[in-house]
Image (cartoon, rainbow, N blue to C red; front, side):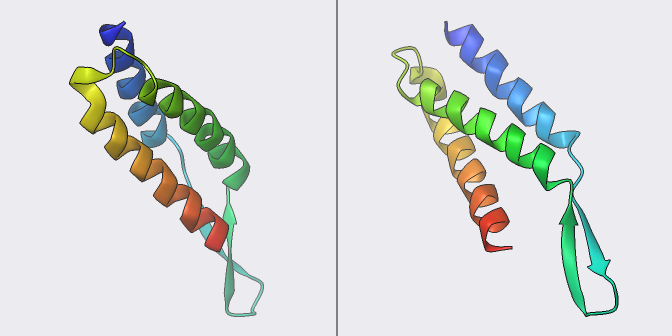
Length: 84
């Protein structure tokens, strides 16, 4: 079970490396739009759910700090996307 947590954390981090978020100008208004948000939101929702499940796992011990850091990162991404 501990190995599964480690593998899942590594997989989640790896999936974010492949995501592309483009910020493009909107016409000539001086404002910008984010492109690719739907895919990012889908991955974000999935990873938040997985991370929360890990936080409640009795096998999280060796990875507790890493899980908490990852949860904080996901929360920050969520906040930025919401604010934008």
